[in-house]
Each structure stands twice: as structure tokens, then as C-alpha cells.
Image (cartoon, rainbow, N blue to C red; front, side):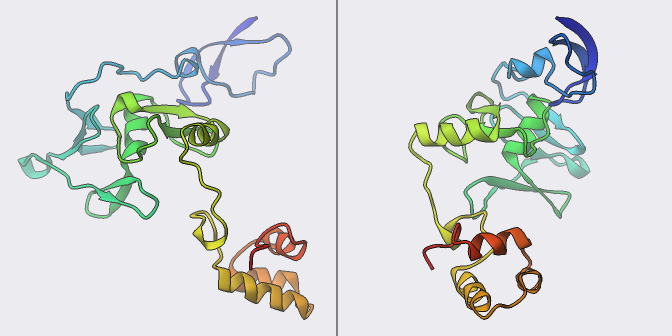
Length: 207
């Protein structure tokens, strides 16, 4: 094993990282602290901390957000998004997911496609520090299946869908009449790959 000072893939900090012999130095991997997946402040309490990047706001390990702007202290009201996560508005216009703020504050982790924030009990509104962990997308999905909250939603009922059922039917109609795949993709604001998958019958089979 070789010890190198490489940027951490999670917190981007520089620390001692164990690498296997032959592994290129340019490869980004988690440092020991992030790899253990333990929050920086692991003690659960209601002690307020300044929100990283937002000096006029405070956050605590219970998932509460407080404003201290203009010398006034008050807990901010949280809203629930269409996909069930709690959201808060900072500086009048900056909307942030609370679990993302918690990850940045206590795990030194900025959520990305590679690593996500998972709610251990499956409750997206429970943002207490003890209920959060950093996982890969695959681990997140497996966890949802294990606790029984994963649903294989089809078509427009899938929150990640960029098309409605009606649009998918229209695309199939255009494909039937040999319209250009590139033109169809531009019309509906999706990639040509999406159109090809519909053409090949690999997606939107139910419409």
C-alpha cells in the first residue's frame, strides 16, 4: 500500500489516502474520514452552526434552519417538494434541499451523481443527523427496496421522466411516419438516445 496526498473524491480535501500499488495518483477516491461515512460532528444536539456558504443562517443536527438576518432570530418554515423532500428558501430566492445542507454541513459532502444522501428510515422529511448517510446511487436504490419504499413507477409517474404519456404516444406516431429522430428529439427537448429507445420498444412500452 502507498500513502499519497490526493484530493478526496467526497470532501475534496487533501489527506493521507491508502492506495493499492499501481493505482494512478490521478484517481480520486474518498479519504479515510469520508470512507468511514461518519459525520464530522457525530454528536446529535440542537447546537446551532453557521450554514456553510450562508452566513446569515444557522443549522442544527435536528435539521432545523434559523435566520439571524438583521439581528432577528427565527426558525424558517420548510416546504415539501413534489417528490417528498423538505426544502428551505435562503436569501429570498435560493431554494435548497435540507438534506443537502445537512450533508454539506456535517459530512463535508456536496451531493452529486456519484454519492447521494440517504434517509435511513425511508422518511424524506426526517433530516436529523442520525438518520442521514452518504451512499452510492446503487446503495440508495437497494436500501429503498430493502425497506419496501421502492416503486417501479412507469411513464409520467416516474419523477425523473422528461416526457408525459401523451408526448410518448405522439413520438411513436411521428416515428411510425418516419420523421427524423433528431428533429423529434429537438421538438420534445430530449436526447436522440431517448427517441431511439422508444423506437426500439425498450421504453414507454405501456403507451
